[in-house]
Amino acid sequence: MKITVIGSTGRTGVHVLEQGIRRGHELTAFTRRPQLLENVTGLNNIVTGDALHVSDIKKAIENQDVVIAIVGDRSTPVATEITKSLIQAMQECSVHRLVCVSSYLLDSKRPRVITPFFQWLLRHSLADRLSADQLIISSKTDWTIVRATRLHDKPATGNVRIQKGEFESGPYEICRADLASVLLDTVTNKAAINSIINATWGRKK
Image (cartoon, rainbow, N blue to C red; front, side, top):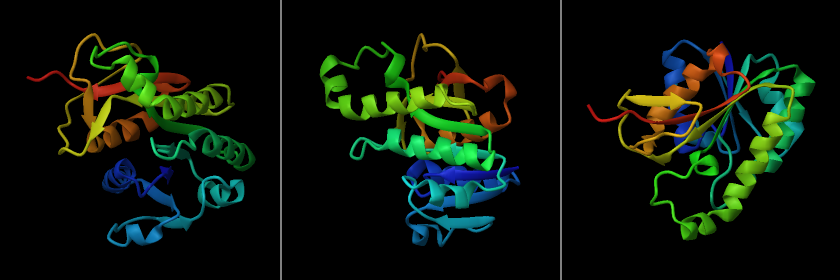
């Protein structure tokens, strides 16, 4: 399958590239910093550009089957603007399948350690992410939004839970390597089209 990864040089994006290559997909990495991919072997293509520009995105997604988008963070809340450009580019290139990373904090009251103050600290990035999600939901793409619990860089476990509703119990965390696996699994999961799914680690055995 031909997959373009937007946000390919981020901490989750690199895992998506490496795992996607191992699975036999044809991966195109879209990035502003191609030098960060010098040690990644097996990529089908690297396209340098800015995800805020429709013309740049189109160069990366032309003739692709799927786009995996991992965009926006707490310091630079630009997910809404990037999503606008991405949806337009996908429409113009007739690319339909979109899998996008979002935040579990948008629609969850658990765990209880998520205090109002913590929500306040993240208010700008969460508002940006919610706006981006709303654009995706109203788009004509075959979208799936994957809302991840707290992310970190521990080793992959392969022990994950995914579901469409809120998790009734923890852990409320997942490593980026396991999230990357969830994203790649979601690409071919037809039951996940036009759905929001949550992703976290499985219960300890």
